[in-house]
Amino acid sequence: MTGEATQAINIQTVDAKGKPVDGMACRIVNGSAEYMGDTPMFGLRVRKSPTPLVAECKRHGYAMARALIISRADLASGSTAQLLLPGGSSMLIIDHISGFMYQYPRWIRLQVGADMIFDRSDEKGRDPTPGIVTRQFDAQVRYASGVQDARVD
Image (tube, rainbow, N blue to C red; front, side):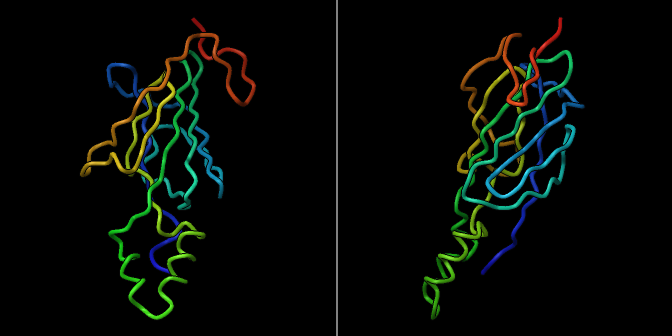
């Protein structure tokens, strides 16, 4: 096996103009674990996995922020060079199954009131990974946890 089982990610929540909205309670889940914290979360250690992270953040008085965070195989980490070693294909399979060969985007900014997708393949340099807004939420959106209203005016 190569690499580490976990990686650090940064999660922020922002409004539609990009201004930070701190103090949103977030639940982040993938096939391996569940993480909780308030934004901003810098250096959150998450277990690597081929399954996406799902982040859902909420705060009284604000619409929720939700995102699907897609990992990709980090082929530059030397995993392809393993194939040249004796037993290399076995190590590559183990790295795939364990999730060690996958990386999530390092820095994401969830937009309050939006459902978004972030993909590791869109990451450029050290800047936040650009996300795609798939839909906007209104005041009647319900949380997966059962909270009735997303925003109180």
